Image (cartoon, rainbow, N blue to C red; front, side):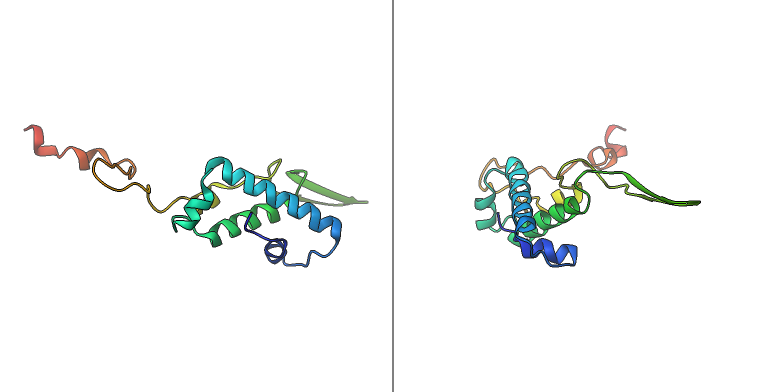
Amino acid sequence: MTATVQDVATQLGRPIDEPSEVAQVTAWLELADMLIRQRYPNLDQLIADGRISENAVDLVEASAVARYSRNPEGFTSRSERIDDYQITHGMTNSSVGLTITDAEWALLTPTDSGAEGAFTITPMGRRPYESRYPHDLWT
């Protein structure tokens, strides 16, 4: 785990001082670290090789925990009603459990395949049909 409780406090924009809240945020940071290590079991080596930035790992862990701490139950909306007045707040990005978004996973994508030498193939994504087969090739 590289992120700290202070990183989460910065994301939330408020201090985290109570011992029970510090313990809870620390547990959530460990959970976020486990989620990342499930996808990248060699995370320490990737950071040491410079293929994944330690700052990016800190940011992703702190952002995921801050998002989860704002809505740990995963509510999608909240309504308040007083007499004839009612207001509803919707949360479109809520999900149950601590999750890492696709954009955050993109920050953690290693910069290269890590392989070097002969017969090394690094996938670069799918190319459009036209670029693989020119129109005049078969005429």
